Image 1 (tube, rainbow, N blue to C red):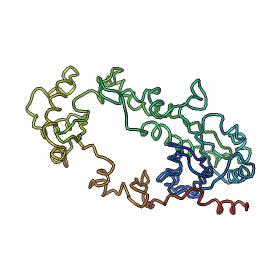
Image 2: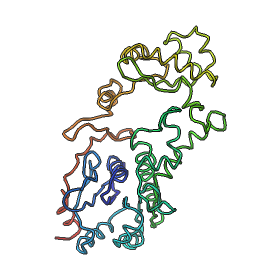
Image 3: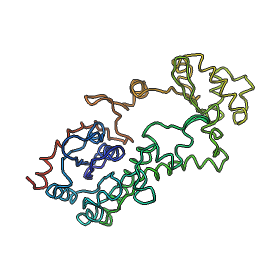
Image 4: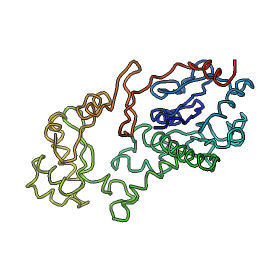
Length: 360
């Protein structure tokens, strides 16, 4: 899909490499600039985040290696870096220097707090960024500590995927104008932007600033229940027709206590009664009860269990190889079903890339 696009990825952690992997999955040529020796625990050199990429080891404090990088930048459509603001400038590799070499270069900057603002130079991680953006607020039931799936809401959803969108939009414009952009992809921005779908419920009265009082985080028909064996089932039968099917399969279709689906005052007791019912049987029982139905119920699976599920297997979502379990590229395109390319070793293509650029 992205054949002919070259991206230079300055080795980093988390969302930057994930963005590079996503672009490589779609066919872009992604070259990771890695520092020599051990990765230092950054995760930048670990599969599957480096799959389909080429790697070159360069010391960005060595003038000779910087010359190699600049020659590489001259051939690139986009660049990814994930340092704190000012680091690349101090190395002489900021947007001004790089776009002087390649005016059409789209310079992608991946940070948590953004390139500007009073917190832009502070340290932080996924959980911190989404807590400040408001994206963490509805992550757990009232009375429980908010905690979302690690990395998914911030690093990936609010960070890496927004960087990918920004790079692709910038490259499309640069191909028309010959002029690149600087993409300021901040997790705090992206995760706040992701909240717009939820915030749109406020106009219909279905979103409350109080936890546990909104349509998606409060009612008995939109939550997770523990089963007898310690497993969990999710229930989210929002529409009346799906709620009716759920009641029928649960055996409570004739119970008047569950008639008023949206009586907020009844939600706690309705939840408690359903919790008792789910806790009486193992997860496998409930999977059988809801199999093939429109009751909008599904089990909570581990990644390994998910890979073995018939639906996931039928779609080929996960593939296992010598690098372990990993999910295939998404989204899908008609006539395009690439096999995941292997992850390279550190600096595997150093000599090859130097030779392509005319260096020894």
